[in-house]
Image 1 (cartoon, helix red, strand yellow):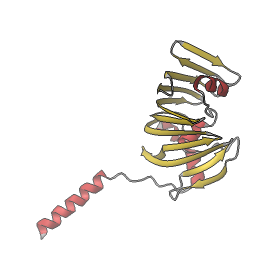
Image 2: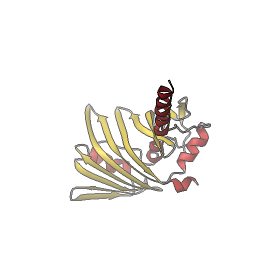
Image 3: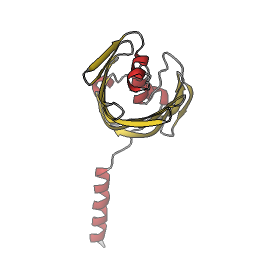
Image 4: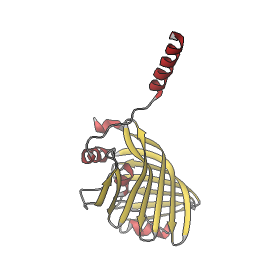
Length: 200
């Protein structure tokens, strides 16, 4: 009996040693404020777009440096390889040997190249799992039981967080669905790389 007891105990302890504890969020608003402080991060994943009865997808690598972004799309959606660099005020798009720059209407430039657009000003915050409460108050905010953001509406976009993942003791989005008029954008994040020093 003692032999069986010690085997059972060792198995239980072994399981506990490999278990990842889920971060505890006590307040939704404070947690969103904490996430909004992350200004330097990278992600790798996939993006899918359904628009005008067409659908396509691509691999995405996104690097964010405060307000500046470097987004690399590879695959059919990106027409082979497309790179978006700049900020919400100035955008450079490289596709093959061609490149275009604009400071007047980045959204229109994206649509001209890709056939669809992205909310570049708000998207970096949305990807982190928080709305932009400073510029336009989100509508119909819904939260999960663990206080992570479940969905909201902002600037004509419906944003839904389907799943989250644990990243360095933070709960960050894993699958995001964005809807605007007849367009649906699905972002699946496979890997996060964040700078924790900002939260100290």
